[in-house]
Length: 206
Image: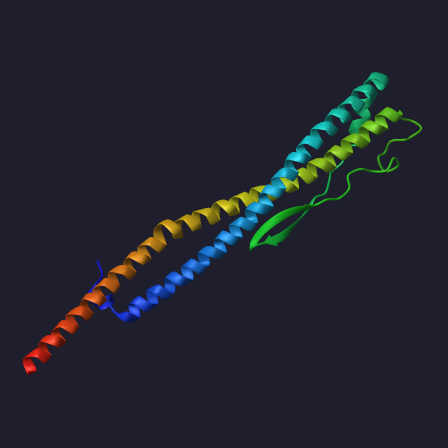
């Protein structure tokens, strides 16, 4: 129920102005969500492709490892333990429609033969090949992790914008439009009553 003090033309103009602002903001939100969804779906296809590529790379790497184990036996495990190391990852953020999207800065994991602490003369070619294939797998995992983290952040932003859009469309705008109609109706009734009183006054003066 609207109080009598709220029923003025100034209030009506203010509410109409607020509705226009909300409608413009709603269009911007829809455009933002559309852009985020476009990037999200493109990234989703990329992540699926990377997962498929990773599965192939892992299969080949394990096949090379089994071949090396067939030739070298337990020496493979000791060589692998000696080649163990930490992989440094740096995170940077990219701004997409006001959303901070994390990206992993990729540093090459694949090393040269000399940097891998394996001697090309003292170790079999199969073991060297297996090592390089697993290092490429690590590279692929890092790339995939970066893409999937971005995908999660984009999906969260799309969900949040959808909630805002639904709230404006289904709650805020309908309530605001209802208030505008009620105020307009009251003002129109007042105007009709004023016209009626004015006519009655004129008729009495004759």
